[in-house]
Every structure is written in C-alpha cells, then in structure tokens.
Amino acid sequence: MGLFLGGLAGYLLIGVPIAMALGMAAFTYLLVTGSVSMMMIFPQRMLGSVNQFVLLTIPLFLLAGNLMNHGGITQRILTFANACVGHRKGGLSLVNVVSSMFFGGVSGAAAADTSALGTILIPGMTRSGYPVDYAAGLTAVSSVVGSIIPPSIIMVLYGVLTGTSIAQLFLAGVVPGIMVGLSLLVYAAWVADRRGYPVAERMSMPERFASFVQAFPVLLLPFIILGGILLGVFTPTESAAVAVIYALILSAAYRSLSLRNLIDALSTTAIMTAGIMFIVSMASIVQFILSFERIPAEVTQVILGLTDNPTLLVLLIVGFLLLLGMFLEPIAAMIISLPVLFEVAQVINLDPIHFGMIVVLTLAIGLATPPVGICLFIACAIANISLEQISRVALPMIGVVLIVLLLVTFVPALSTALPSIMLPR
Image 1: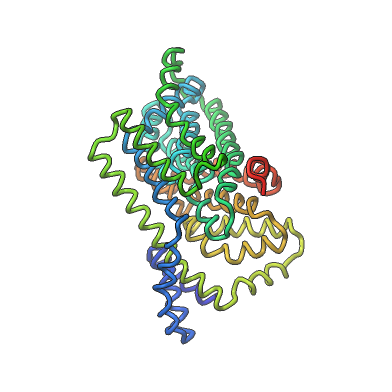
Image 2 (image 1 turned 120 degrees about the vertical axis):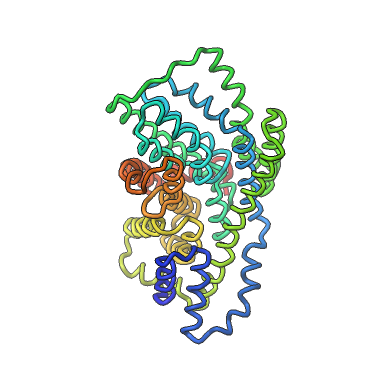
C-alpha cells in the first residue's frame, strides 16, 4: 500500500494528470513486486468498469446541464434568483448563492455551476462594487451545492461503487443541500451588512411574476426527476435521458439553442465524460490491486485498532476525506478510499445512505478547498486573480459549510429521514 501511494504522490507532484498517475502508480507497484504479468487482465477490467448501464447517467446529466447552459437558460435562473433576493442588502451575493442552488438541481456537477454562473456573476458583482476576490470565492464555494442537491454525479458514482440505491441517495441530498445553501445565504447577508455592499433596485411585481413564469419550466426539472423516480415512472438512469429530452424541449420552446450551441454542448459533454470514464477505468486497476493484496481488510483492522469509539472513527473518516479532497478530485478520491472506508462504515453499522451523504458532502467541499480545488481554479481563471487571493476569502465560507458537514455527520436523520419516508427499504 505504501509503495502504491508513494508512487501516486510522486507522479502527482511532478504534474502527471490524476488518471494517468493512477495507472502509472499501479504499473510501478506491479513492476517492483514482480507481478507485471497481471497486467494482461487490466484491459478487460478497465472495459468492465465503464460498461455499466447505470453509468449512462453521467453523460446524460452532464448533457442536460450543458444544454441548459449553452442554450442561454442559465440567464433565466439568474433573473428569477434576482427577483427573489436581489433587492436585499448585498443582493447580488445572495443571488449568487440562490442561483447555485437552482442550477445545482439541473447540472449535477459543481464545476459546471462555477463555469456557467461565474462567467455572468463574477463580472456583474465586480461592476456593482463587490471585491473581485469575494465574488470569485463566493461563486466557487456556493457551487459545492451542485454536487449535493439532486441530481448529483458524485452520488451516482457512490451508488455504483457501493451498490447503494441512487434514488435514495438523491433524496438524501435534498436536506443537506438546502442547509448548505441557507448557511451560505446567512454568511453572505452578514458580510453584506458588515461591509455595506450595494442594494439592487427592487423589481416590480409584474417583473417578478414574469421572471417566475420564464424560470418555472427550468425549476421543474429536479421535481420531474425525483417525482418520476418515486412514482416508478422511470429509473434513475432513465431519468437522466428524460432530463436531456426536457432540456431540448425547453431550448426549442425558448428558441435559445442554435446549431452551433448544440454542437458546443455535445462536444463539452463528450470531453467531460471521457475524462470521468478514463479516471473510472484507470481506478479499476487500483481497486484490483487493493483487493488482490487484501489491503482494505488490513487497513480496516488497523483503523479499528486505533479506537472502538464509533464517534471517533467517523471523525477519522471525515478528516481523512477532507485531506484527500484537498489534493484529489472527488471521483478519484472516492474510488481510492471507498474500498477501505465503506468496510469500516459497515463494521460500525453506519447506514450506507448516511455514510454516502457524509462522503459526498466531504469530497464536494474539497472542490472549493485549496490547493487544488477545481472550482477555485475555474473562478480564478474567470476573475483573473491568484489562488492565494481567492483562498483568503473562501476559507471562512468553507468553515460555514464544515459546520453543516458536522451536523449531517452526527444527525443521521438529516440524510435518512426523507429517503425512509419516500422510499422505505
């Protein structure tokens, strides 16, 4: 285990992409241990890891989000969010958070939220008198909601890797996702009041109603997905196809998706999907090595040997995932750590749905945490500022989200109540 992790860390330090680093670390391990012949079965395992029907959910949800973004539907979400909270002190900062909550129910990916909303909100907030680092930091951290509120790409992968119901995971993310959004709203309102950020002009009632009418079909998408799953109309995988069809219908109705934009949405989705699937396929090699060497069982025994207190064990898991999320993107971190951590969770009788929410929320926080949080880098590129600048303003916001993480961790009902009511096992 030490040899593999050392090789992985070394390759990452010299700038090797994560997907390639996983495969190269595995090859190094086999080379040093004299087991190179085992590589003959790797192509089959790599193909088998991505040849799963449920993984179709990923490109389809990504495509739905990209169609919404490239079709200009994102602007309707922003307009409605502005109608809801834009007239309050620090209105644009509140619009930022509310838009992330709305858009998170469409795209399922935090990075997509940062890119789609950041290109509009960061320049807009800057022109209105907000510091550029604050605008970028708030955009990056609030985008974390996109990985929690259903649909969520990270939840889909957790369900695939652990055999947990994706429908129940989607339901489990509703309350924690809203909690994260509300906590950031409170923080943004407090900062706005303290620093005297500007107040936008209040929309008239006809304008508010018009913005609601324009955004209502878009806001229906999460409810269509969850409602269809709960009523048994379609499976979680089929719901992703429904989301794509719905996005195409909306774009046609709004006449906002040109042929060029459609091609851009398809190409962006193809590139994002290829990256995710490449990581999944390379990580299957890592899973094979871990299983072959019985490393998960051995590490589990080591962890359980540290303490038999379930509370301390959960804190150890959360701390480890936070550390891992600071250096790896969620998909890679999940694939590497779940073989061990899921076994520990089972030993201490942690509900798989509750544990899934802990894992998803913890790794989602890593997306906005320096030094390699992808949402931070996207926001930095849009705002043209340094990572150091954005990190200073993002850390207090991350602290707010960490409080929500602790509540979700130690109050299981926040994650499990809704799934147990709507989809009893």
